[in-house]
Image 1 (cartoon, one colour):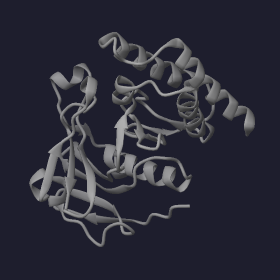
Image 2: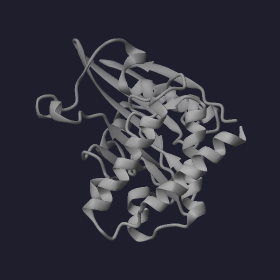
Image 3: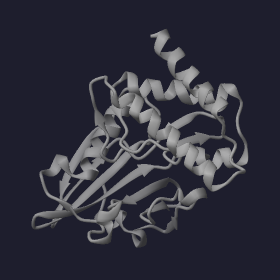
Amino acid sequence: MTRLTDIVTKTRDGAIVYDSATLNQIEEAAFEADGWPIATAVDGAFRSSGRGNTLFVSDGSNEFVLRHYVRGGLIRKFVRDTYLWTGENETRSFSEFNLLMKLRNLGLPVPVPVAARYCRRGPFYTADLLTMKIPDVQSLASRILEQSGDGEFWQNIGRELYRFHEHGVYHADLNAYNIQIAGDDTVWLLDFDRGRFREAGAWQQENLARFHRSLQKIQSMDKRVHFSQARWNELLEGYFSESRSV
């Protein structure tokens, strides 16, 4: 079981929380692109790089993912990256950092949380999150543009999703971009902004339905995408077979 230890350091206009098992200390420069010797924008198929708010950064030895929280949907036309202050642990960054720590301790395949920051300005704040980069992964969206994967591949995705649901883990934006596939076909889940633990309920099937719509959408965007109802049925077979085995 992974043990992470978080340390909170106050800054001029906010605070930073970091995992002392990964870092001895951290400066605010770590949350800016020019604070790193290497910083490159994340790109991917089907606009899977998000909203231009994510960078791969490196100190030359270790690789990280740096994400600045920005709004989505219609509200982004008016408010880009500020959120209403309701308390330190309620900030987007601290909340996701703490959730990732708990998920790692459960043995679930999520990125290692390294550090999180918020900067408060009156009743509003901005937020950033730093995680370890998972080596040799690509989004499921990119993967199925290249190749389909066999029945075992899809069943394994279903089994992993059930593991999250078994622990009551709600992912607010489960889609083909946030599910990542490593070179050995292991499954990882990213982006737990607004995620939380919930009691079992209808949300679990709604979660799967959202993911299904995501796959159907990217297939409609590019007919080369290797996805079909048969593949989805294989995923569900993996999901429900895992539920019967516990």
